[in-house]
Image 1 (cartoon, rainbow, N blue to C red):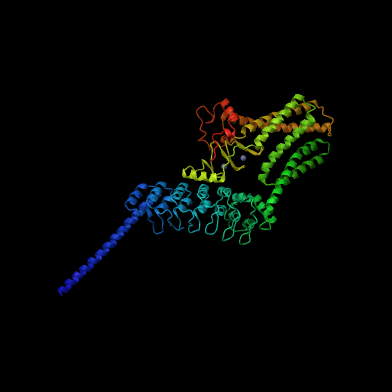
Image 2: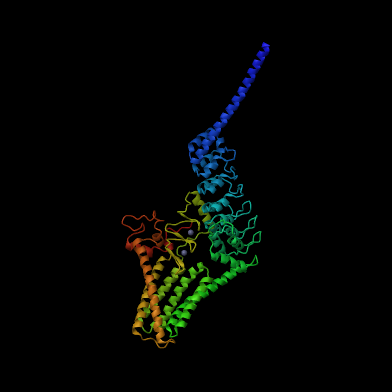
Length: 601
Ligand SMILES: [Zn+2]
Ligand SMILES: [Zn+2]
């Protein structure tokens, strides 16, 4: 019995020993687990907050930590990528971290995480360590699609520069342009993609929506505008449900459901433009809109210019003749109706470009006619010849300002991408020193002109009256042009005044003296008006050039350039070299070929 008991005791003892060992093992294991879990938590925190030391210590002790992932597949590299911890990332990648580890709810790589947060530096680093740029996450998106959705144009440009196709498809055949049209209300990425050759007429696999459909679905007016400006006709494309972009927009307009975008950013004109192209293009492959558009444009130019050229005689002679007031009122009303019609029929953007030039040319034309027909016999001959001479010079300067290169920085498509990659890899790709529309580094004092859609060297302003940018290449011609215009309007005022005083009108014209007198009065008033604003503008310009040594853009946006424009003591700006030197530099050292700042990138 005692044996038995002993045995039992022994057995009991044995059993209890075994249990204890197991328990100990489990305890140790769980301690180990707790310890390793604890260490992992510490490392994750360190990765998030950018502390290299604990990670370095753990990885050097056990290199597995560099590749370790939690139960969701998230690695330390993921945490570093989302927090832009590049020093730790480099360390981890050098110690065997998996650059394409897939983890998290969205089954994403560290490259997806870095892209989602817009960390260009981390993106560059991961790509340099051969991160795969074409892996789809759980939503079927490659990193470039994510960058396009969130509006990170520099990252989009970098991916394309590194060889990702500009129309790279995601799992559902969506292109980056479709994503940016749908998700990104800022048009910068869409503009960039189109500039790099993205096709605006591709459709996705699920709903067969084109980028225009996607922009319409989110009522993305700024992207709609640039898509509608594309030379390729796209507004006639229909999706799987047989709907065009216009149908979608109109449907959203009429629907009572809450809108995705409560403040639609598209204008009535855009809707109208969509509607008109929608109605004129029943055939999907039709190229009618382009032809129609061109014909419309020529028609607009002719009617607008014709109207502006005829306004003066209608107005001047109409008021001058001795017809009854109701007829005069009728004439004025006709002008009003015609103007309204032209304004209604033309696009606002087009009106901004054509009207000022046409108005200027019309004024010039009628001033010349007046000089030739009415003032020539009245004013001293010397004055008339001086007028002719100044006119010649004025036209030379006007043509130079209008037609010459204001300082556009011309770069080929491939060079643009090369410069994007170079800048990104050197860590210099930022909004301060890079134009994301032109994809070129900004030059000192250059600015992107929204009207010309180009970067212009030493940008002053965009002048609608000469239909060109005023920059380093043509600024001096612009100043000479303003000076001559100011002199010529003054001469016209004096000549008109002399004629008015003399009151002896040429008799060989087909209009009567009374009419001529009133006409000259109208030209006098018109010239005084032009003389006033031209002289004012010239004075401002000369003050900026000679005294301040600044451009209009720099003066108006001083706050934005405050750091660069911090003047030296006693100077108005860092470019101020004293009155004479400023003047010399402006006229003698401003041609584009002399610019040491212009270089091909
Ligand atoms: Zn630009
Ligand atoms: Zn411009």
